[in-house]
Amino acid sequence: MRDRYCGWVKKRPSNGPKSSQEAGIGIIHQELNLIPQLTIAENIFLGREFVNRFGKIDWKKMYAEADVLLARLNLRFKSDRLVGELSIGDQQMVEIAKVLSFESRVIIMDEPTDALTDTETESLFRVIRELKSQGRGIVYISHRMKEIFEICDDVTVFPRRAVYCRA
Image 1 (spheres, rainbow, N blue to C red):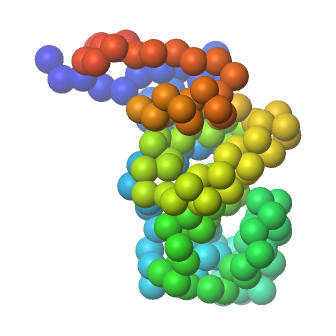
Image 2 (image 1 turned 90 degrees about the vertical axis):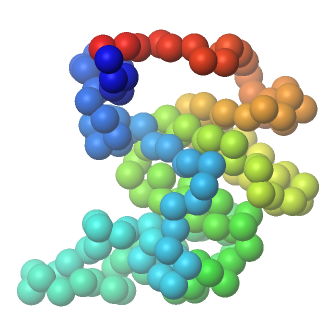
């Protein structure tokens, strides 16, 4: 029997990523999901570009909205930069901005520090603390116990090969 995703979001059955996203749950995967040849704004709003009444992309509005998201994360670069020019740590911040663009109330971070330097990790932790202070929930997945105890309020340990929903 094949496993399939099942869960509940806002007291309704969730049948996958789109319904979870619509319910305010965002995920940042271990492997970054960005296109290096596109700008930060284009990556944040890919597939959800702002269009004007003539059906043309409203670049000015899209870049302005992306700059607002970056400012909320206290980032000092503009959204017209190519993602490929950024450090891995800054790319991780773009992923967070992308999740925030969906108005995510809960953010799942899967091994977010794997490719980060110590300085970038501390910067990420500052952002996580800020997001927590705004009332956002963070699910932080890591095998690095030091990080877990530094950043997490509560800890849940899942044993290997645990199955939580089978259909």
